[in-house]
Image (cartoon, rainbow, N blue to C red; front, side, top):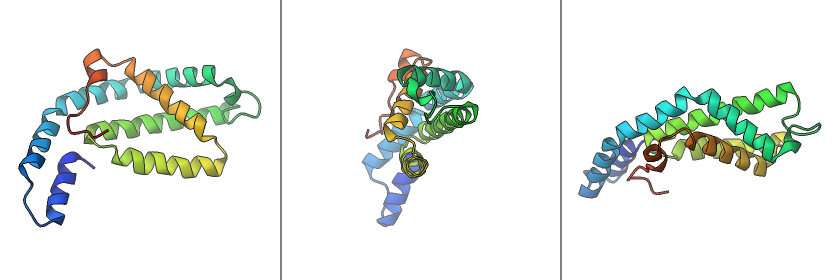
Length: 155
């Protein structure tokens, strides 16, 4: 779930102490805590603004989604899309706090693929929705917050 937890569990599984490199990774992770919190604060405080802007961008790029027969056509379906946008944004904040994409991958990507496939929601639309969430979020971050990358990140 977090870099520190993952490194400790890895060392414990191998019945050894953390290596010098692992300890340095932990120090880097902890040193980036204030920056991660700043990013999460912006995302959390602007959730509605981000979701609304992401939806505006998505439906401008893909008007067929809100047209009759589209997956976001009608008040109920559109509300469900916006609810999902909020859920994914919250999941991203967890990943930022943890310094890990594990939860995003396991819950967000795998779960979304299964759920949306069963509902007949096209995956390209979900990919585009995630892009609009990213774009709307980055627009609210300062230059250093948007450019910041956890030094322990591998992606």
